[in-house]
Amino acid sequence: MRSMLRSKGEKKYTWQDYLAWPDEERWEVIDGVAYGMTPSPSSRHQVVAGNFFALVRERLRGKSCRVFVAPLDVYLDDFNFVQPDVMVVCDEKKIRDRIYGAPDLVVEVLSPATSLKDKREKKDLYEKFGVREYVIVHPEEMLVERFFLSEGGFKGPDVFGSQEVLPLLFLDGVEVLLWDVFEVEPPGEGEGA
Image 1 (cartoon, rainbow, N blue to C red):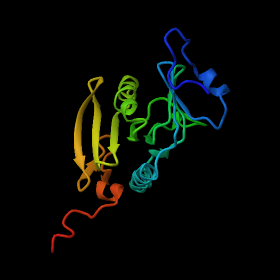
Image 2 (cartoon, one colour; image 1 turned 90 degrees about the vertical axis):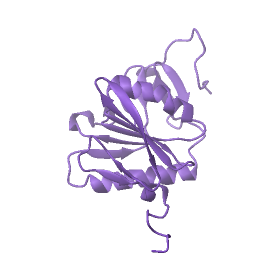
Image 3 (cartoon, helix red, strand yellow; image 1 turned 180 degrees about the horizontal axis):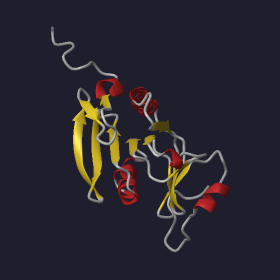
Image 4 (cartoon, helix red, strand yellow; image 1 turned 120 degrees about the vertical axis):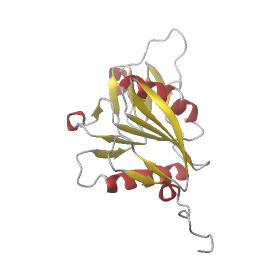
């Protein structure tokens, strides 16, 4: 099995290399470095990612933007292709058998095996390729960090707790009720109302 990281001096992996790898293996490549996507995410990760996807899909009903959930490849260039947990693409020309080009919104749900990569390499990658909004979900801490593109770079993070509403800046009028993402009581309930 290939190493999760290439060693110094190895060639950079490309899209063509990736297409030749076995289908049962899941990999992401950032700047030519291959990152294995095993072990699979926890059930908590899947619940939170699924909830985020479902809530955004419902709020985008009747709009031109489309929401997708992993696994689905996002091809950025021959040395950069990833599988975000949730993404929104508003340019239909980018949607083919895969996504070609930067999504408008990317959501990554942290797991112990991927959190450093999501917070560092992927954040830099999404900023470089012009993702308009990047949301990092912390399922155990039940909080969300949001970065947004402004003047060619990410600003933020804005931090939201589990009983707050996350407005998606580049999707006019779309808000995500984070208590529904994390499956906790809505604000105001349980206070003896």
